Length: 121
Image (cartoon, rainbow, N blue to C red):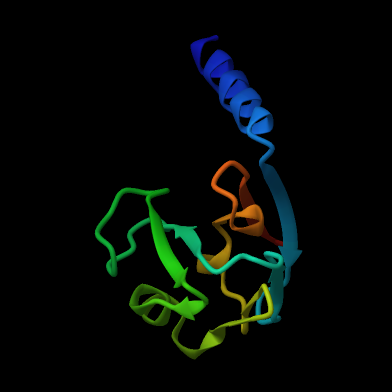
């Protein structure tokens, strides 16, 4: 019951902040394009289980895009598979490890948090 209540409160507070949560499906090996939108120059990704690059707990956010440029962590985690152009974050050769949550701010507005979950079909 407490978990359900916590989840409901979290969802309501996310909704009240004018945020957005999307799900985008992709197939292993494909290129997936996350349309973050104009004005977005920063993005973070939730750390996967057993991510040796961060040594952080599951779900910890790591920046992969800062001021429109792929970060060092982004290069470590995705290699040359990650690119960003005109508000679109592209991941080539999708892997199971890429199926996680990507966080950003709509139009760069701190009052409008957004996230995209990648789900493998």
